[in-house]
Length: 153
Ligand SMILES: CC(C)(COP(=O)(O)OP(=O)(O)OC[C@H]1O[C@@H](n2cnc3c(N)ncnc32)[C@H](O)[C@@H]1OP(=O)(O)O)[C@@H](O)C(=O)NCCC(=O)NCCS
Image (cartoon, rainbow, N blue to C red; front, side):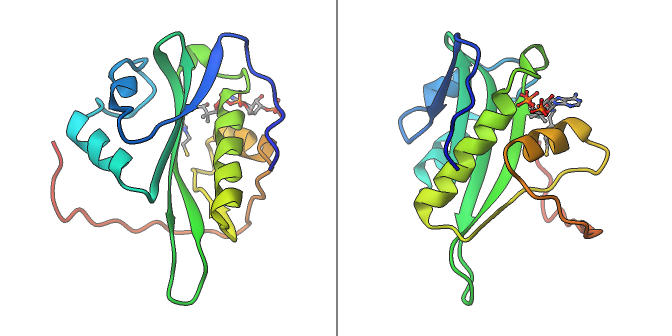
């Protein structure tokens, strides 16, 4: 998808690569679920199948979207958009939509035949954001099943 939406003038979109770990040292407190871990960040950025794009205001990360691309033995490359978060102060200004559009642009460039994300049915802001980014909602009632092989602290 062509990225055409305009953002507030002070918002800069930046893709992070290996060596950009320092960018995630200054993050608005409600952007990620947990504190950013430097070792996990280094591992994430070094992995070519893991992707992250951030929205910056000055040096502060106010939003991000992360994703991973993968293949199956019987299907070509797909993109799973893992998380999208925008600091509450900066919501409803088109940042989430733009970050998702960036991910769809990446999927196109990687040759992905499919890109997807999951969210709770009651998360109307996320659903509106993804629809605004051109996403097509499926009607399926999906059940999420989880395991916790190890605890994370
Ligand atoms: C979901 C989220 C990323 C959206 O980010 P955002 O920057 O506010 O989204 P945008 O400003 O790009 O909004 C895109 C569309 O969603 C709509 N929208 C955003 N927040 C909304 C809300 N609280 N209620 C209803 N609609 C909302 C906007 O009006 C816009 O619609 P439009 O294009 O039809 O006008 C953000 O609300 C968020 O971080 N939520 C908490 C974390 C979360 O739930 N992440 C998703 C997990 S899957």
